Length: 552
Image 1 (cartoon, rainbow, N blue to C red):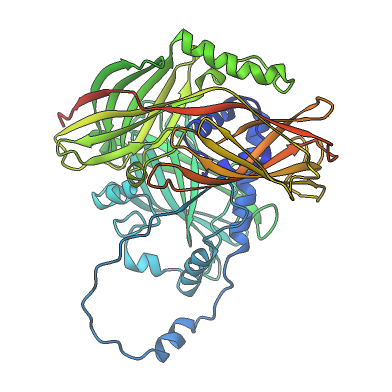
Image 2: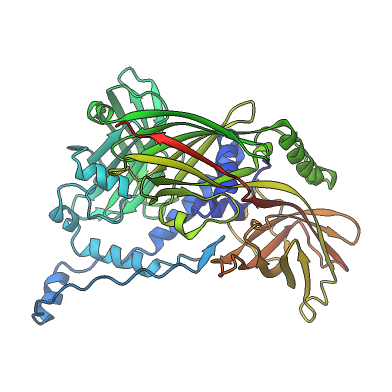
């Protein structure tokens, strides 16, 4: 996979990439220092925006003043909650935080009474805390929480670690940043930047894992580690921080906060076991799926799957990728990561036919699968095989489980072009059909505005053309990401896409709007050709069901 531009990486930092795109970016980040730096920049920008919407501190008497003005409210019978409305838009790029209001309300609650959450419960990892993922809630409810008062202070700020949930799949912990006054600092510390490190070692100092995720539940911060190796019964979480409570100097405190926290893994290890499955199937598209084992841990269940392509399928994928090289936009060698532009959709159902969890492929998820979403991470080997660790909410009382393959999504070469005169397109939009999909180009502009996010080494300059597009896609076609722009002189330009999609209608079709950014194009060409080079297609002619034993 070639290096990412800001638009795509920003969507990835916002957790808006899914399926094949998410997998490809995650894998590329393992080996590309430049793209990791861009990813860290996008994460830092997101955290800075979160800081920017923090509510101001309220007076100490705020709660009492409000309560004094409230009249007594009679007891009422609690009514059932209304069914949550179905989400009707999937944003492929957010330029603003849609949930600022809710986030601000949460911040106000924290500033009214920073100890409020502690008053309600002894642990942040509890069944009623909807800000924590359900697997951690369940582990907390079952007693897999280790607590202590681990803290270190410097420059008037105390880093205090409170709760730890640990099993062989992950470790999660909560912490606070306290001022000498007793108030709380925003729980930020830029964990991915130089000078700040959070990691896990064994008792001999061998590193086992770096921080993998971070989130806020003000006044708490929550850190997560994904564990991939065999974990000993005793590990140590290391904090080595030099800047906390802000971003890029905005509200940050300099100092030295070094803390080592022992974690007992024994209880989580003893409560975890796996079931061997080892069932394999090859589809007519040349995708081999090997369901290897199912692991049960206190905070998650995890299905391990290995997928690979037949040589003929790999050759077809190479041909689709080579098309971009012939246009002069791809210079690196085609490798195993490029040849893995495919995905699968499946459901896990119990003996009663109920969906336990579902994984959607790159083309489009079903609503049923979205309700029981699987968190999926993949890693490549040198042969191009992908080992997936697909995690979902811990299983309940199911006695049998079935893996049901729903579809295979494969990327293939596209042969579709749109040619137009940029000066005329606003007055006369053009519309064309491609394999049942409708695509309309309705606008063209040159953007020369400075944007601080587009900085070297990721862009040569900030000038780029913008093409506005809309249309309708079928349920068998993925998002149109892979475009190339060619001007009247035959010069090819790389294109990045952002936009949004509606949920499918009754026929499975969905409307979309897209913005194509053509980087390096500084002039309005007399004629412009947009060429779609690759497209993801869904194949539902699969028929495989694997029985998973649950001898728990």
